[in-house]
Length: 239
Image (cartoon, rainbow, N blue to C red; front, top):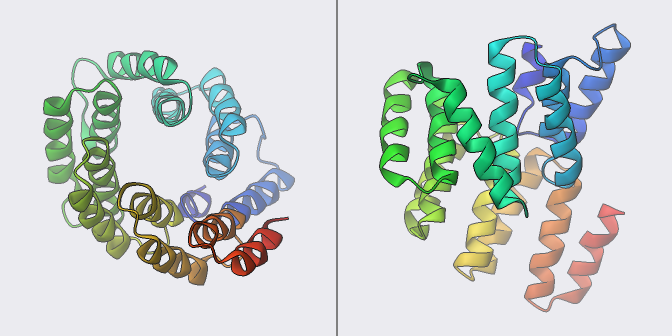
């Protein structure tokens, strides 16, 4: 399980492959944690499929932490897609589940995201500060903290601060492809800086040269730059 979870945020094809191997070795495919990991593996390219796995993970949760983790995914995925109202409903369920007070790094991160979805910046800042205290010098936790901080800055239109936080997240965990994708998205959509977005995607491709989402994003960037030959070359790699 530990090795599988180390792949979260990395190459989704590698994570899916590892999950298939785990199931072939006897791991229950309907285990809540396996379904949670399946959801994480699908989120970049197939959000609706990821949502389906997250819902199954919640349904099959047998521990309090598994339920908390599944509610977190359902809050995040719905709010990121076209289901904002549903995302807010899950955010309230997540906060209620964490009552009376979130404890530990993980749950403070989850509470911060829920408050972000519910547009409560004061509580977001409070939970992030608690998470920062709990993180200490743990590089993996600091990477996640700065990622969420970058997300917070992006939704409040503080894009330069978002970029700064996301770059710190990459420094602490350079293997997390999600962070590169989100950073490139800000450069492309919010800063109209296609060259910087391409630089970020190229850095991600050095780490995950098989990840289809990266070629799709790079193709879109070349298309925006009217470099249609390179755009087509990247799109063909997705097929």
